[in-house]
Image 1 (cartoon, helix red, strand yellow):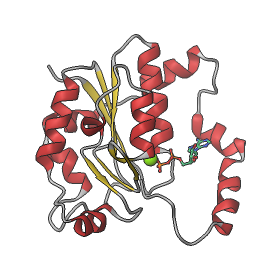
Image 2 (image 1 turned 90 degrees about the horizontal axis):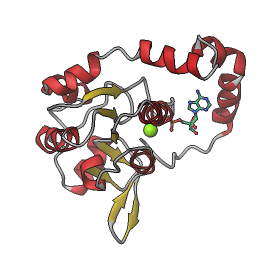
Image 3 (image 1 turned 135 degrees about the vertical axis):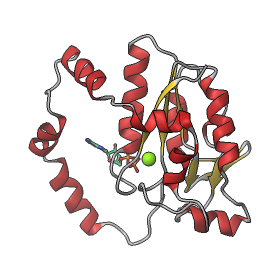
Length: 195
Ligand SMILES: Nc1ncnc2c1ncn2[C@@H]1O[C@H](COP(=O)(O)OP(=O)(O)O)[C@@H](O)[C@H]1O
Ligand SMILES: [Mg+2]
């Protein structure tokens, strides 16, 4: 049976996808679900004795119950923090759908909920012929994940914790945008990750 899932994407890297994915996993766990996070493609990894490791994938694994094997959470991992199709080309690897869908199915059998974090923005190319958006279009289970409306679940979760009902208004009032805009204006030209 396929777990219910969501696909977390956005306009770019650094816009809160991991933050939101980890929050969703915690919310699912708090509601008694077995919830697993997945980062199908990641560039910007560290070399470890066990292989390449990406911070986002590790954050998702840490927030997952049960914790998935690294290779199932992140089937395509690349060292340099550059766009994934360039990193894959440099590594001599072709990013393909089959290993991603296969990992999704294996994780799906172990969880009630899956949270899939995309790499970079929605329109990121993964290879000469594959766009990130194709991941979602490829498989019914991923289409379901993309089409699932999590707003009612998030509304209930926020209400249960006494959080402001409108997160965008809280975000605007919180001053985070001004803070991050100022930080970005002074940040070094070379990014440390592209995830
Ligand atoms: N709503 C938010 N409030 C405060 N900090 C945030 C928020 N969203 C993201 N961040 C912070 O911004 C940075 C980038 O977020 P992240 O989730 O890693 O982005 P992405 O996964 O899209 O690259 C992180 O340090 C994260 O903790
Ligand atoms: Mg991320």
